[in-house]
Amino acid sequence: MSLDALTMNRLFGYESAFDHPVTRWIVSVAAALLVIAFLLIFALGKWGRLSAETYRELVARTVTWAWLVPLLFLPILAGAAWTMVGVLMLSILCYREYAFATGLFRHHVTSLVVVIGILALSFASVDHWYGFFVALPALGVVVLCAVSTVVDQPEGYIQRTALGLFAFLLFGFCLGHLSYLANDRDYRPILLLLLVTVEMNDIFAYLSGKLIGRRKLAPRTSPGKTVGGALGAMVMTTGLVVMLGQWVFSGTALGKMPALLGLGLVISLSGQFGDLMLSSIKRDLGIKDIGNTLPGHGGLLDRFDSLLLAAPAYFHYVGYFRGFGLDQPVRIFTG
Amino acid sequence: MERWDYTGAKDRDVAPGQRPMCTRRETGLVGALVSLPWWILVRGYLRLAHRLHVCGREHLPLDPRFIIVANHASHLDALSLAAALPLRWNGHVFPVAAGDTFFEKPSAAWFAALCLNALPLWRRRASGHALTDLRDRVEAGHSVLILFPEGTRSRDGRMAGFKPGIGRLVAGTTIPVVPAYLEGAHRAFPPRARCPRPTPIRITFGPPRFFADQRDTRDGWRAVSAELETAVRALS
Image (cartoon, rainbow over all chains, first blue to last red; front, top):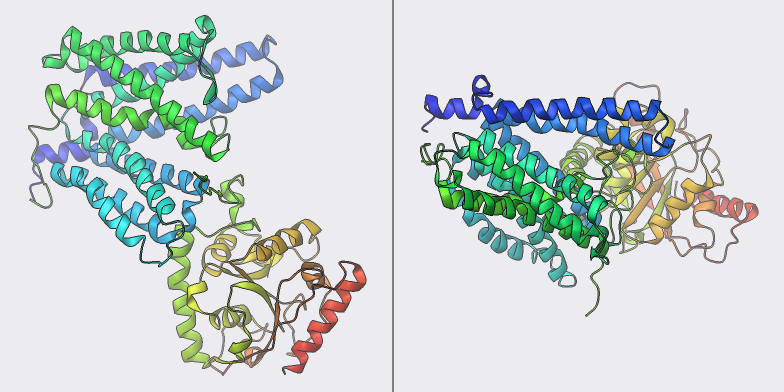
Protein backbone atom coordinates (compact mmCIF):
# COMPACT_ATOMS: atom_id res chain seq x y z
CA MET A 1 0.00 0.00 0.00
CA SER A 2 1.31 3.40 -0.94
CA LEU A 3 -1.27 5.75 0.50
CA ASP A 4 0.91 8.82 0.97
CA ALA A 5 -0.35 12.28 1.84
CA LEU A 6 -0.62 13.25 -1.84
CA THR A 7 -2.89 10.30 -2.63
CA MET A 8 -5.01 10.76 0.50
CA ASN A 9 -5.52 14.39 -0.43
CA ARG A 10 -6.62 13.44 -3.95
CA LEU A 11 -8.98 10.72 -2.71
CA PHE A 12 -10.59 12.49 0.26
CA GLY A 13 -9.28 16.05 0.23
CA TYR A 14 -12.43 18.13 0.20
CA GLU A 15 -10.37 21.09 1.51
CA SER A 16 -8.79 21.49 -1.93
CA ALA A 17 -12.16 21.31 -3.75
CA PHE A 18 -12.00 24.90 -4.98
CA ASP A 19 -8.26 25.19 -5.55
CA HIS A 20 -8.60 25.41 -9.32
CA PRO A 21 -10.20 28.63 -10.65
CA VAL A 22 -12.17 26.76 -13.35
CA THR A 23 -13.85 24.61 -10.66
CA ARG A 24 -14.95 27.80 -8.89
CA TRP A 25 -16.33 29.33 -12.09
CA ILE A 26 -18.20 26.24 -13.23
CA VAL A 27 -19.83 25.64 -9.84
CA SER A 28 -20.91 29.25 -9.43
CA VAL A 29 -22.19 29.53 -13.01
CA ALA A 30 -24.18 26.28 -12.63
CA ALA A 31 -25.73 27.50 -9.37
CA ALA A 32 -26.53 30.87 -10.94
CA LEU A 33 -28.08 29.24 -14.02
CA LEU A 34 -30.39 27.12 -11.85
CA VAL A 35 -31.58 30.16 -9.91
CA ILE A 36 -32.09 32.14 -13.14
CA ALA A 37 -33.99 29.21 -14.70
CA PHE A 38 -36.36 29.05 -11.72
CA LEU A 39 -36.94 32.82 -11.71
CA LEU A 40 -37.52 32.85 -15.47
CA ILE A 41 -40.03 30.00 -15.34
CA PHE A 42 -41.92 31.55 -12.43
CA ALA A 43 -41.95 34.94 -14.16
CA LEU A 44 -43.16 33.48 -17.46
CA GLY A 45 -45.79 31.49 -15.54
CA LYS A 46 -46.98 34.61 -13.67
CA TRP A 47 -47.29 36.63 -16.87
CA GLY A 48 -49.30 33.79 -18.43
CA ARG A 49 -46.83 33.20 -21.25
CA LEU A 50 -46.82 29.41 -20.69
CA SER A 51 -49.65 26.90 -20.94
CA ALA A 52 -50.37 25.07 -17.69
CA GLU A 53 -48.94 21.86 -19.11
CA THR A 54 -45.70 23.41 -20.38
CA TYR A 55 -45.31 25.17 -17.03
CA ARG A 56 -45.66 21.90 -15.07
CA GLU A 57 -43.27 20.13 -17.44
CA LEU A 58 -40.65 22.90 -17.16
CA VAL A 59 -40.91 23.03 -13.35
CA ALA A 60 -40.57 19.22 -13.10
CA ARG A 61 -37.50 19.33 -15.36
CA THR A 62 -35.85 22.17 -13.47
CA VAL A 63 -36.60 20.66 -10.06
CA THR A 64 -34.91 17.47 -11.25
CA TRP A 65 -31.89 19.50 -12.40
CA ALA A 66 -31.86 21.24 -9.01
CA TRP A 67 -31.12 17.99 -7.16
CA LEU A 68 -29.22 16.32 -10.00
CA VAL A 69 -26.56 19.04 -10.28
CA PRO A 70 -25.56 18.87 -6.58
CA LEU A 71 -25.66 15.08 -6.81
CA LEU A 72 -23.17 15.23 -9.69
CA PHE A 73 -21.00 18.04 -8.35
CA LEU A 74 -20.71 17.11 -4.66
CA PRO A 75 -18.84 13.80 -5.14
CA ILE A 76 -16.46 15.47 -7.62
CA LEU A 77 -15.76 18.28 -5.17
CA ALA A 78 -15.51 15.96 -2.15
CA GLY A 79 -12.66 13.88 -3.53
CA ALA A 80 -11.57 11.33 -6.12
CA ALA A 81 -12.79 8.39 -4.03
CA TRP A 82 -16.31 9.83 -3.90
CA THR A 83 -16.14 10.61 -7.61
CA MET A 84 -15.36 6.96 -8.28
CA VAL A 85 -18.23 5.83 -6.03
CA GLY A 86 -20.51 8.23 -7.91
CA VAL A 87 -19.48 6.85 -11.30
CA LEU A 88 -19.97 3.30 -9.96
CA MET A 89 -23.53 4.14 -8.88
CA LEU A 90 -24.22 5.79 -12.24
CA SER A 91 -22.92 2.71 -14.09
CA ILE A 92 -25.03 0.31 -12.05
CA LEU A 93 -28.20 2.41 -12.26
CA CYS A 94 -27.78 2.84 -16.04
CA TYR A 95 -27.24 -0.91 -16.40
CA ARG A 96 -30.36 -1.54 -14.31
CA GLU A 97 -32.52 0.61 -16.58
CA TYR A 98 -31.10 -1.08 -19.66
CA ALA A 99 -31.54 -4.58 -18.22
CA PHE A 100 -35.18 -3.90 -17.32
CA ALA A 101 -35.87 -2.43 -20.77
CA THR A 102 -34.23 -5.21 -22.81
CA GLY A 103 -35.35 -8.13 -20.62
CA LEU A 104 -31.72 -9.03 -19.80
CA PHE A 105 -32.57 -8.79 -16.08
CA ARG A 106 -34.24 -12.21 -16.30
CA HIS A 107 -30.82 -13.78 -16.84
CA HIS A 108 -29.51 -13.43 -13.32
CA VAL A 109 -26.16 -15.10 -13.98
CA THR A 110 -25.32 -12.79 -16.90
CA SER A 111 -26.49 -9.77 -14.88
CA LEU A 112 -24.34 -10.79 -11.94
CA VAL A 113 -21.23 -11.03 -14.16
CA VAL A 114 -21.90 -7.56 -15.61
CA VAL A 115 -22.28 -6.06 -12.12
CA ILE A 116 -19.12 -7.79 -10.87
CA GLY A 117 -17.30 -6.50 -13.97
CA ILE A 118 -18.45 -2.95 -13.18
CA LEU A 119 -17.17 -3.35 -9.60
CA ALA A 120 -13.83 -4.62 -10.93
CA LEU A 121 -13.53 -1.54 -13.17
CA SER A 122 -14.10 0.66 -10.11
CA PHE A 123 -11.40 -1.22 -8.27
CA ALA A 124 -8.96 -0.74 -11.17
CA SER A 125 -9.70 3.00 -11.01
CA VAL A 126 -9.27 3.33 -7.24
CA ASP A 127 -6.11 1.25 -7.41
CA HIS A 128 -4.82 3.40 -10.29
CA TRP A 129 -3.96 0.23 -12.24
CA TYR A 130 -4.28 1.03 -15.93
CA GLY A 131 -3.23 -2.48 -17.03
CA PHE A 132 -6.16 -4.08 -15.22
CA PHE A 133 -8.55 -1.34 -16.36
CA VAL A 134 -7.86 -1.99 -20.06
CA ALA A 135 -7.70 -5.77 -19.52
CA LEU A 136 -11.24 -5.88 -18.18
CA PRO A 137 -13.10 -5.65 -21.51
CA ALA A 138 -11.17 -8.70 -22.73
CA LEU A 139 -11.68 -10.55 -19.44
CA GLY A 140 -15.34 -9.55 -19.60
CA VAL A 141 -15.68 -11.29 -22.97
CA VAL A 142 -14.03 -14.42 -21.59
CA VAL A 143 -16.11 -14.61 -18.42
CA LEU A 144 -19.45 -13.65 -19.99
CA CYS A 145 -19.10 -16.11 -22.89
CA ALA A 146 -18.09 -18.86 -20.48
CA VAL A 147 -20.66 -18.20 -17.76
CA SER A 148 -23.51 -17.84 -20.23
CA THR A 149 -23.09 -21.55 -21.11
CA VAL A 150 -23.46 -22.62 -17.47
CA VAL A 151 -27.27 -22.46 -17.50
CA ASP A 152 -27.19 -25.04 -20.36
CA GLN A 153 -29.68 -23.07 -22.45
CA PRO A 154 -28.39 -22.73 -26.03
CA GLU A 155 -31.54 -20.98 -27.26
CA GLY A 156 -30.98 -17.24 -26.83
CA TYR A 157 -27.26 -17.68 -26.09
CA ILE A 158 -26.09 -15.05 -28.59
CA GLN A 159 -28.75 -12.60 -27.48
CA ARG A 160 -28.12 -12.74 -23.73
CA THR A 161 -24.33 -12.85 -24.09
CA ALA A 162 -24.24 -9.99 -26.59
CA LEU A 163 -26.69 -7.88 -24.59
CA GLY A 164 -24.52 -8.43 -21.51
CA LEU A 165 -21.30 -7.53 -23.32
CA PHE A 166 -22.82 -4.44 -24.91
CA ALA A 167 -23.99 -3.31 -21.47
CA PHE A 168 -20.63 -3.99 -19.85
CA LEU A 169 -18.76 -2.06 -22.53
CA LEU A 170 -21.13 0.92 -22.54
CA PHE A 171 -22.11 1.37 -18.89
CA GLY A 172 -19.07 -0.25 -17.34
CA PHE A 173 -16.06 0.44 -19.52
CA CYS A 174 -17.08 3.62 -21.36
CA LEU A 175 -18.51 5.36 -18.27
CA GLY A 176 -15.65 3.92 -16.19
CA HIS A 177 -13.26 6.28 -17.97
CA LEU A 178 -14.82 9.10 -15.91
CA SER A 179 -13.77 7.20 -12.83
CA TYR A 180 -10.23 6.42 -14.01
CA LEU A 181 -9.79 10.06 -14.93
CA ALA A 182 -10.10 10.96 -11.23
CA ASN A 183 -6.55 9.65 -10.75
CA ASP A 184 -5.26 12.95 -12.07
CA ARG A 185 -4.25 15.71 -9.69
CA ASP A 186 -6.45 18.19 -11.63
CA TYR A 187 -9.36 15.79 -12.12
CA ARG A 188 -11.96 18.27 -10.82
CA PRO A 189 -11.75 20.87 -13.61
CA ILE A 190 -11.06 18.18 -16.24
CA LEU A 191 -14.16 16.21 -15.28
CA LEU A 192 -16.38 19.26 -14.83
CA LEU A 193 -15.27 20.57 -18.23
CA LEU A 194 -16.55 17.36 -19.85
CA LEU A 195 -19.82 17.20 -17.88
CA VAL A 196 -20.66 20.84 -18.53
CA THR A 197 -19.76 20.88 -22.23
CA VAL A 198 -21.55 17.58 -22.97
CA GLU A 199 -24.74 18.77 -21.28
CA MET A 200 -24.48 22.20 -22.94
CA ASN A 201 -23.92 20.42 -26.26
CA ASP A 202 -27.45 18.93 -25.90
CA ILE A 203 -28.91 22.32 -25.07
CA PHE A 204 -27.00 24.05 -27.93
CA ALA A 205 -28.30 21.42 -30.39
CA TYR A 206 -31.85 22.04 -29.18
CA LEU A 207 -31.57 25.85 -29.34
CA SER A 208 -29.85 26.10 -32.71
CA GLY A 209 -32.24 23.45 -34.07
CA LYS A 210 -35.12 25.76 -33.10
CA LEU A 211 -33.39 28.76 -34.70
CA ILE A 212 -31.82 27.48 -37.91
CA GLY A 213 -32.84 23.82 -38.13
CA ARG A 214 -34.74 22.84 -41.27
CA ARG A 215 -33.45 19.60 -42.75
CA LYS A 216 -33.99 16.52 -40.55
CA LEU A 217 -30.81 14.81 -39.41
CA ALA A 218 -32.10 11.26 -38.93
CA PRO A 219 -35.90 11.31 -39.16
CA ARG A 220 -36.32 7.59 -38.53
CA THR A 221 -34.06 7.55 -35.46
CA SER A 222 -34.91 10.85 -33.82
CA PRO A 223 -37.42 13.04 -35.65
CA GLY A 224 -36.66 16.12 -33.55
CA LYS A 225 -33.02 16.49 -34.60
CA THR A 226 -31.96 18.73 -37.47
CA VAL A 227 -28.76 19.24 -39.44
CA GLY A 228 -28.80 22.88 -38.38
CA GLY A 229 -29.02 21.85 -34.73
CA ALA A 230 -26.08 19.47 -35.07
CA LEU A 231 -23.88 22.05 -36.83
CA GLY A 232 -24.89 24.83 -34.43
CA ALA A 233 -24.02 22.62 -31.46
CA MET A 234 -20.63 21.80 -32.99
CA VAL A 235 -19.77 25.47 -33.37
CA MET A 236 -21.08 26.58 -29.97
CA THR A 237 -19.69 23.62 -28.01
CA THR A 238 -16.27 24.04 -29.63
CA GLY A 239 -16.37 27.70 -28.64
CA LEU A 240 -17.18 26.80 -25.04
CA VAL A 241 -14.49 24.10 -24.94
CA VAL A 242 -11.84 26.50 -26.28
CA MET A 243 -12.87 29.10 -23.72
CA LEU A 244 -12.73 26.74 -20.70
CA GLY A 245 -10.02 24.45 -22.05
CA GLN A 246 -7.30 27.09 -22.34
CA TRP A 247 -7.59 27.61 -18.55
CA VAL A 248 -7.92 23.92 -17.64
CA PHE A 249 -5.08 22.75 -19.88
CA SER A 250 -2.81 25.83 -19.77
CA GLY A 251 0.85 24.93 -19.80
CA THR A 252 0.33 21.60 -21.58
CA ALA A 253 0.34 20.70 -25.29
CA LEU A 254 -3.45 20.74 -25.16
CA GLY A 255 -3.60 24.40 -24.11
CA LYS A 256 -2.88 25.59 -27.69
CA MET A 257 -5.37 26.44 -30.40
CA PRO A 258 -5.54 23.59 -32.96
CA ALA A 259 -5.57 20.95 -30.22
CA LEU A 260 -8.40 22.71 -28.35
CA LEU A 261 -10.46 23.04 -31.54
CA GLY A 262 -10.05 19.29 -32.03
CA LEU A 263 -11.15 18.68 -28.43
CA GLY A 264 -14.31 20.72 -29.00
CA LEU A 265 -15.18 18.72 -32.11
CA VAL A 266 -14.47 15.40 -30.33
CA ILE A 267 -16.80 16.30 -27.44
CA SER A 268 -19.56 17.65 -29.64
CA LEU A 269 -19.50 14.77 -32.15
CA SER A 270 -19.21 11.95 -29.61
CA GLY A 271 -21.91 13.59 -27.50
CA GLN A 272 -24.33 13.81 -30.42
CA PHE A 273 -23.58 10.27 -31.56
CA GLY A 274 -24.22 9.02 -28.01
CA ASP A 275 -27.60 10.72 -28.15
CA LEU A 276 -28.38 9.12 -31.53
CA MET A 277 -27.19 5.76 -30.22
CA LEU A 278 -29.64 5.79 -27.32
CA SER A 279 -32.42 6.95 -29.68
CA SER A 280 -31.65 3.95 -31.91
CA ILE A 281 -31.66 1.59 -28.92
CA LYS A 282 -35.02 2.95 -27.78
CA ARG A 283 -36.53 2.72 -31.30
CA ASP A 284 -35.28 -0.85 -31.59
CA LEU A 285 -36.87 -1.73 -28.24
CA GLY A 286 -40.03 0.16 -29.18
CA ILE A 287 -40.11 2.39 -26.08
CA LYS A 288 -40.18 6.15 -25.57
CA ASP A 289 -38.19 6.57 -22.35
CA ILE A 290 -35.82 3.99 -20.99
CA GLY A 291 -36.79 4.57 -17.35
CA ASN A 292 -38.78 6.82 -15.01
CA THR A 293 -36.14 7.76 -12.46
CA LEU A 294 -35.89 11.46 -13.35
CA PRO A 295 -39.24 13.29 -13.46
CA GLY A 296 -39.46 15.40 -16.63
CA HIS A 297 -36.42 13.74 -18.25
CA GLY A 298 -37.22 10.02 -18.31
CA GLY A 299 -34.56 7.61 -17.13
CA LEU A 300 -31.00 8.30 -16.05
CA LEU A 301 -29.87 6.98 -19.42
CA ASP A 302 -32.12 9.45 -21.24
CA ARG A 303 -30.20 12.20 -19.45
CA PHE A 304 -26.66 10.80 -19.64
CA ASP A 305 -26.76 9.14 -23.07
CA SER A 306 -24.37 11.71 -24.54
CA LEU A 307 -21.74 10.90 -21.92
CA LEU A 308 -21.47 7.24 -22.91
CA LEU A 309 -19.41 7.77 -26.05
CA ALA A 310 -17.97 11.14 -25.04
CA ALA A 311 -16.25 9.79 -21.90
CA PRO A 312 -13.73 7.44 -23.61
CA ALA A 313 -13.28 9.77 -26.60
CA TYR A 314 -12.46 12.71 -24.30
CA PHE A 315 -10.26 10.56 -22.04
CA HIS A 316 -8.05 9.31 -24.86
CA TYR A 317 -7.86 12.64 -26.69
CA VAL A 318 -6.77 14.44 -23.52
CA GLY A 319 -4.57 11.50 -22.55
CA TYR A 320 -2.72 11.71 -25.87
CA PHE A 321 -1.63 15.26 -25.12
CA ARG A 322 -1.00 15.24 -21.39
CA GLY A 323 -1.64 11.78 -19.91
CA PHE A 324 -3.53 11.18 -16.65
CA GLY A 325 -2.14 11.05 -13.17
CA LEU A 326 1.46 10.71 -14.37
CA ASP A 327 2.79 12.21 -11.13
CA GLN A 328 0.55 10.04 -8.91
CA PRO A 329 1.54 6.67 -7.38
CA VAL A 330 0.16 3.69 -9.30
CA ARG A 331 -1.30 0.39 -8.02
CA ILE A 332 -2.04 1.91 -4.62
CA PHE A 333 -3.47 -1.29 -3.10
CA THR A 334 -2.03 -4.07 -5.26
CA GLY A 335 1.43 -2.60 -5.83
CA MET B 1 -32.73 -12.33 -39.98
CA GLU B 2 -35.26 -12.67 -37.21
CA ARG B 3 -35.63 -9.92 -34.64
CA TRP B 4 -34.36 -10.53 -31.15
CA ASP B 5 -36.99 -10.89 -28.50
CA TYR B 6 -36.85 -7.89 -26.21
CA THR B 7 -39.57 -8.25 -23.62
CA GLY B 8 -38.91 -5.56 -21.06
CA ALA B 9 -39.89 -5.88 -17.42
CA LYS B 10 -43.68 -5.84 -17.11
CA ASP B 11 -43.47 -3.42 -14.16
CA ARG B 12 -41.09 -0.99 -15.88
CA ASP B 13 -43.61 1.87 -15.85
CA VAL B 14 -44.32 1.51 -12.11
CA ALA B 15 -42.90 4.20 -9.80
CA PRO B 16 -39.98 2.82 -7.73
CA GLY B 17 -41.87 3.09 -4.41
CA GLN B 18 -44.84 1.19 -5.81
CA ARG B 19 -42.88 -1.82 -7.09
CA PRO B 20 -43.42 -4.14 -4.09
CA MET B 21 -47.18 -3.69 -4.45
CA CYS B 22 -47.24 -4.40 -8.18
CA THR B 23 -48.73 -7.78 -9.12
CA ARG B 24 -46.79 -7.69 -12.42
CA ARG B 25 -43.51 -7.45 -10.48
CA GLU B 26 -40.60 -9.50 -11.82
CA THR B 27 -37.56 -10.70 -9.91
CA GLY B 28 -34.32 -8.95 -10.84
CA LEU B 29 -30.75 -9.46 -9.67
CA VAL B 30 -31.32 -7.74 -6.31
CA GLY B 31 -34.41 -9.85 -5.62
CA ALA B 32 -32.54 -13.03 -6.53
CA LEU B 33 -29.54 -12.15 -4.37
CA VAL B 34 -31.75 -11.34 -1.37
CA SER B 35 -34.25 -14.17 -1.67
CA LEU B 36 -31.86 -17.06 -2.33
CA PRO B 37 -30.09 -16.89 1.08
CA TRP B 38 -33.41 -16.16 2.77
CA TRP B 39 -35.04 -19.29 1.34
CA ILE B 40 -32.01 -21.46 2.06
CA LEU B 41 -32.24 -20.35 5.72
CA VAL B 42 -36.01 -20.92 5.85
CA ARG B 43 -35.62 -24.40 4.36
CA GLY B 44 -32.94 -25.29 6.88
CA TYR B 45 -35.05 -23.95 9.77
CA LEU B 46 -38.21 -25.84 8.72
CA ARG B 47 -36.28 -29.07 8.25
CA LEU B 48 -34.48 -28.80 11.60
CA ALA B 49 -37.10 -27.24 13.88
CA HIS B 50 -40.31 -28.60 12.34
CA ARG B 51 -39.03 -31.77 10.60
CA LEU B 52 -40.98 -30.68 7.53
CA HIS B 53 -42.32 -33.80 5.84
CA VAL B 54 -43.79 -33.72 2.32
CA CYS B 55 -46.07 -36.41 0.82
CA GLY B 56 -47.36 -36.57 -2.76
CA ARG B 57 -44.53 -34.61 -4.44
CA GLU B 58 -45.21 -36.73 -7.55
CA HIS B 59 -48.46 -34.78 -8.05
CA LEU B 60 -46.59 -31.51 -8.68
CA PRO B 61 -46.47 -30.51 -12.39
CA LEU B 62 -42.98 -30.53 -13.95
CA ASP B 63 -43.29 -26.95 -15.23
CA PRO B 64 -43.52 -24.08 -12.72
CA ARG B 65 -46.92 -23.02 -14.09
CA PHE B 66 -49.62 -23.88 -11.57
CA ILE B 67 -51.45 -22.78 -8.43
CA ILE B 68 -51.30 -24.41 -5.00
CA VAL B 69 -54.35 -24.03 -2.75
CA ALA B 70 -54.16 -25.05 0.91
CA ASN B 71 -55.75 -24.65 4.30
CA HIS B 72 -54.42 -21.70 6.31
CA ALA B 73 -53.73 -21.80 10.03
CA SER B 74 -50.37 -20.07 10.58
CA HIS B 75 -47.69 -17.78 9.19
CA LEU B 76 -45.57 -20.88 8.59
CA ASP B 77 -47.97 -22.16 5.89
CA ALA B 78 -46.69 -20.21 2.90
CA LEU B 79 -43.07 -20.73 3.99
CA SER B 80 -43.58 -24.50 4.30
CA LEU B 81 -45.36 -24.85 0.95
CA ALA B 82 -42.68 -22.83 -0.86
CA ALA B 83 -39.96 -24.84 0.87
CA ALA B 84 -41.57 -28.05 -0.41
CA LEU B 85 -40.92 -26.97 -4.03
CA PRO B 86 -37.54 -27.37 -5.82
CA LEU B 87 -35.03 -24.63 -4.97
CA ARG B 88 -34.31 -24.06 -8.69
CA TRP B 89 -37.78 -22.47 -8.93
CA ASN B 90 -36.66 -19.75 -6.52
CA GLY B 91 -37.93 -16.41 -7.84
CA HIS B 92 -40.83 -18.10 -9.62
CA VAL B 93 -42.83 -19.07 -6.51
CA PHE B 94 -45.19 -16.34 -5.35
CA PRO B 95 -47.16 -16.63 -2.10
CA VAL B 96 -50.27 -14.45 -2.43
CA ALA B 97 -50.45 -12.44 0.78
CA ALA B 98 -53.08 -10.14 2.26
CA GLY B 99 -52.30 -6.62 1.09
CA ASP B 100 -53.75 -5.07 4.25
CA THR B 101 -51.38 -7.08 6.52
CA PHE B 102 -48.17 -7.35 4.54
CA PHE B 103 -48.13 -4.39 2.18
CA GLU B 104 -49.37 -1.37 4.16
CA LYS B 105 -46.03 -0.29 5.68
CA PRO B 106 -43.21 0.31 3.15
CA SER B 107 -40.65 -1.67 5.21
CA ALA B 108 -42.99 -4.66 5.47
CA ALA B 109 -43.83 -4.38 1.77
CA TRP B 110 -40.16 -4.44 0.75
CA PHE B 111 -39.54 -7.44 3.01
CA ALA B 112 -42.56 -9.27 1.58
CA ALA B 113 -41.49 -8.47 -1.97
CA LEU B 114 -37.73 -9.06 -1.74
CA CYS B 115 -37.50 -11.99 0.70
CA LEU B 116 -40.85 -13.78 0.48
CA ASN B 117 -41.46 -12.88 -3.18
CA ALA B 118 -45.07 -12.32 -2.10
CA LEU B 119 -47.75 -10.71 -4.27
CA PRO B 120 -50.43 -8.57 -2.59
CA LEU B 121 -54.18 -9.14 -2.75
CA TRP B 122 -56.37 -6.64 -0.92
CA ARG B 123 -59.09 -8.60 0.83
CA ARG B 124 -61.97 -6.17 0.93
CA ARG B 125 -61.23 -4.28 -2.27
CA ALA B 126 -59.79 -7.08 -4.42
CA SER B 127 -60.57 -5.86 -7.93
CA GLY B 128 -61.16 -8.07 -10.93
CA HIS B 129 -58.12 -6.29 -12.37
CA ALA B 130 -55.81 -7.70 -9.67
CA LEU B 131 -57.12 -11.22 -10.27
CA THR B 132 -56.68 -10.84 -14.05
CA ASP B 133 -53.06 -9.78 -13.48
CA LEU B 134 -52.46 -12.88 -11.35
CA ARG B 135 -54.16 -15.14 -13.90
CA ASP B 136 -52.12 -13.68 -16.80
CA ARG B 137 -48.94 -14.16 -14.85
CA VAL B 138 -49.55 -17.90 -14.25
CA GLU B 139 -50.80 -18.48 -17.79
CA ALA B 140 -47.61 -16.92 -19.21
CA GLY B 141 -45.60 -19.56 -17.31
CA HIS B 142 -42.65 -19.43 -14.89
CA SER B 143 -44.98 -18.63 -11.99
CA VAL B 144 -46.33 -20.77 -9.17
CA LEU B 145 -48.91 -19.07 -6.93
CA ILE B 146 -49.55 -20.18 -3.35
CA LEU B 147 -53.09 -19.29 -2.32
CA PHE B 148 -55.20 -19.69 0.78
CA PRO B 149 -58.83 -19.46 -0.38
CA GLU B 150 -60.15 -19.35 3.21
CA GLY B 151 -59.08 -15.70 3.12
CA THR B 152 -57.53 -15.67 6.61
CA ARG B 153 -55.73 -17.86 9.14
CA SER B 154 -58.02 -20.20 11.07
CA ARG B 155 -58.12 -19.14 14.73
CA ASP B 156 -58.90 -22.65 16.09
CA GLY B 157 -57.10 -24.84 13.54
CA ARG B 158 -60.28 -26.00 11.80
CA MET B 159 -60.54 -25.27 8.08
CA ALA B 160 -63.17 -22.70 7.00
CA GLY B 161 -65.07 -22.61 3.70
CA PHE B 162 -63.26 -21.48 0.51
CA LYS B 163 -64.11 -18.09 -0.97
CA PRO B 164 -65.06 -18.03 -4.68
CA GLY B 165 -62.14 -15.78 -5.72
CA ILE B 166 -60.01 -18.81 -6.60
CA GLY B 167 -62.71 -19.81 -9.13
CA ARG B 168 -62.46 -16.40 -10.73
CA LEU B 169 -58.74 -17.01 -11.16
CA VAL B 170 -58.85 -20.42 -12.88
CA ALA B 171 -62.33 -21.03 -14.37
CA GLY B 172 -61.99 -21.61 -18.12
CA THR B 173 -58.16 -21.76 -18.11
CA THR B 174 -55.69 -24.63 -18.51
CA ILE B 175 -53.90 -23.74 -15.24
CA PRO B 176 -53.43 -26.85 -13.05
CA VAL B 177 -54.52 -26.36 -9.43
CA VAL B 178 -52.76 -28.55 -6.85
CA PRO B 179 -54.62 -29.06 -3.55
CA ALA B 180 -52.44 -29.29 -0.46
CA TYR B 181 -53.16 -29.98 3.20
CA LEU B 182 -50.96 -28.66 5.99
CA GLU B 183 -50.95 -30.53 9.27
CA GLY B 184 -49.33 -29.35 12.48
CA ALA B 185 -48.74 -25.77 11.38
CA HIS B 186 -51.48 -24.49 13.68
CA ARG B 187 -49.94 -26.27 16.68
CA ALA B 188 -46.47 -24.99 15.74
CA PHE B 189 -47.48 -21.32 15.35
CA PRO B 190 -51.10 -20.46 16.18
CA PRO B 191 -52.29 -16.93 15.22
CA ARG B 192 -52.11 -15.67 18.80
CA ALA B 193 -48.59 -16.94 19.54
CA ARG B 194 -45.54 -14.70 19.36
CA CYS B 195 -42.97 -17.31 18.36
CA PRO B 196 -43.29 -20.67 16.66
CA ARG B 197 -42.83 -23.86 18.68
CA PRO B 198 -40.60 -26.61 17.27
CA THR B 199 -43.34 -29.17 16.54
CA PRO B 200 -43.56 -31.19 13.29
CA ILE B 201 -45.31 -29.98 10.12
CA ARG B 202 -46.53 -32.28 7.39
CA ILE B 203 -47.68 -31.36 3.86
CA THR B 204 -49.76 -33.61 1.62
CA PHE B 205 -50.15 -32.70 -2.07
CA GLY B 206 -53.09 -34.13 -4.05
CA PRO B 207 -53.41 -34.70 -7.81
CA PRO B 208 -53.88 -31.45 -9.80
CA ARG B 209 -57.39 -30.35 -10.87
CA PHE B 210 -58.24 -28.63 -14.15
CA PHE B 211 -61.11 -26.23 -14.78
CA ALA B 212 -60.88 -25.64 -18.55
CA ASP B 213 -64.58 -26.43 -19.16
CA GLN B 214 -65.83 -24.58 -16.08
CA ARG B 215 -67.72 -21.42 -17.08
CA ASP B 216 -66.28 -18.05 -16.06
CA THR B 217 -69.43 -16.98 -14.16
CA ARG B 218 -70.43 -16.58 -10.53
CA ASP B 219 -71.86 -20.14 -10.46
CA GLY B 220 -68.73 -21.51 -12.14
CA TRP B 221 -66.48 -19.77 -9.57
CA ARG B 222 -68.50 -21.24 -6.69
CA ALA B 223 -68.33 -24.73 -8.23
CA VAL B 224 -64.54 -24.44 -8.57
CA SER B 225 -64.00 -23.33 -4.96
CA ALA B 226 -66.38 -26.03 -3.67
CA GLU B 227 -64.53 -28.73 -5.61
CA LEU B 228 -61.13 -27.51 -4.35
CA GLU B 229 -62.40 -27.29 -0.76
CA THR B 230 -63.53 -30.92 -0.97
CA ALA B 231 -60.18 -31.90 -2.49
CA VAL B 232 -58.19 -30.24 0.32
CA ARG B 233 -60.47 -31.73 3.02
CA ALA B 234 -60.03 -35.18 1.45
CA LEU B 235 -56.26 -34.92 2.06
CA SER B 236 -56.64 -34.30 5.80
